[in-house]
Amino acid sequence: MNKRILITGGAGFLGSHLCERLLQRGDEVLCVDNYFTGTRRNVEHLIGHPRFELMRHDVCFPLYVEVDEIYNLACPASPVHYQHDPVQTTKTSVHGAINMLGLAKRTNAKILQASTSEVYGDPVVHPQTEDYWGNVNPIGIRSCYDEGKRCAETLFFDYWRQHNLRIKVLRIFNTYGPSMHPNDGRVVSNFVMQALQNQDITIYGDGSQTRSFCYRDDLVEAMIRMMDTPDDVTGPINVGNPNEFTIRELAEIVIELTGSSSKIINKPLPQDDPTQRKPDISKATSELSWSPTVQIREGLVKTIEYFENIVRNEAAESTN
Ligand SMILES: NC(=O)c1ccc[n+]([C@@H]2O[C@H](COP(=O)([O-])OP(=O)(O)OC[C@H]3O[C@@H](n4cnc5c(N)ncnc54)[C@H](O)[C@@H]3O)[C@@H](O)[C@H]2O)c1
Image (cartoon, rainbow, N blue to C red; front, top):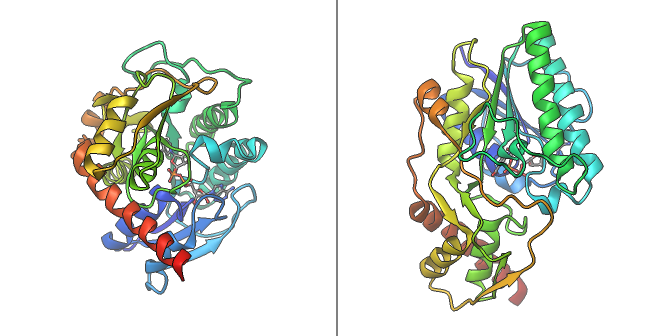
């Protein structure tokens, strides 16, 4: 039997690839999105597929559909976007979670939450393990996202305790790859777009802060494995690539791979920017038999190819 699967935020960066993967597997996919940061373009190649349906809907409002599984990805993920309308960001996380959990309860569907490493805030424990409770500023400019996602996790676990819902919580660390929004201000898209246009590459702070970067396909594989775990596996489980780079190293690799003449410049660090982020993925390895397979250079080459197309198309449009 095909499963009927709802993906909220399905027209976004990760959601659109998840739609592709589940269709390839033979499932029926209902992609729901309000197109705040995602676009129809990300899924237009799927429109017309007999098992694919696209619906414009805001998860802040209840949704009445019949489904077997729900992947709850709806939420702007980059600081530029989630800080644009912080109240809406918190509503999306919290009301969105309540609405999707309500739907899961009514339909007895399994539900997966795309949570985030941001629940650890600016961590004082390295690498971050799932039992670390985090160091989050509740009133800062990132709080709408961090606290919204933390509250969503609380709701997931309360629905599990109170209503025996089958829940799956993944804490996703920085992920990059094709279909990322070119202007979302995330470090990989920023650096690649700046390098391709031979503009200065902007590093916030001195560039010694570290991040670990997971390639999109690896991440989506982990999501699917998580959904398919036995019911007693609830998470939270960290998923990401534990190979750590400084932001400066990343800028240098991007310049090398693009053959760019860009120069690196430094700007002040934004408020609450974490200094170090690295997942401990032992749980993902033992419970999902998962670890990342695509390393940074290979993933960046594919991502650069994707952004090169965007830059080429933009240039062609401006000369027409
Ligand atoms: N990419 C990462 O590095 C990363 C890291 C941690 C967590 N996550 C989480 O994974 C999920 C997907 O992230 P992404 O990187 O694909 O980001 P994205 O911004 O590309 O995707 C989010 C999608 O949700 C949609 N959306 C936003 N608000 C909505 C609403 N109220 N109703 C319906 N749809 C709405 C957007 O239009 C977009 O298509 C998010 O929940 C994000 O918090 C991503």
